[in-house]
Each structure stands twice: as structure tokens, then as C-alpha cells.
Length: 92
Image (cartoon, rainbow, N blue to C red; front, side):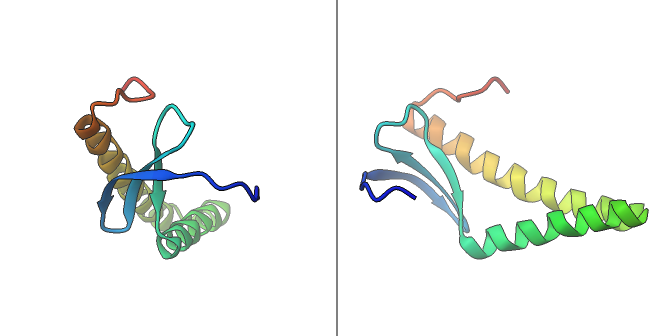
């Protein structure tokens, strides 16, 4: 990691998610707490194992959990950008 320091503006905080505008970046970043990141990683690993073993019922459950987390983070991101008057970096 770089040793240089830069500032960031917090645009939104919602539960375990936040949206931050890093200095020098055109678009804000979406962030999640470290424990939430670890949990998401565990579910992705679980999905991978379920698919390898052919357990499609558990794989479906894991995928739905991942979709819920990513959708929630995306919602917080989009709300924050709308509130700050920033256009999305993608077409939805």
C-alpha cells in the first residue's frame, strides 16, 4: 500500500456500508466494514464449495445472500450519489 496520505469526504453511512469520495477520484467509492467483508467472503467461498459438490439448494441460498448484500450496498451508493448531485459511473 502507498504511504501517501489523501483526504476523503464521507457522503453516506448506512449500517455497515458507506460511500466516500476520495481526493482526486472522479467517482465515489462504496465501502463496507471489515467484518461484513469477511462474512461476504465466507458466503462466496460457501457458494463455490456448494457448486463444486453439486449442492444446488445451498448454492441458491448462498447466491441469494450475496445478491442481498451487493444490492443493499448498491442502493446506498446510488442514494448517496443522488443526494450529492453526482451522476452514476454506470448506466442502470
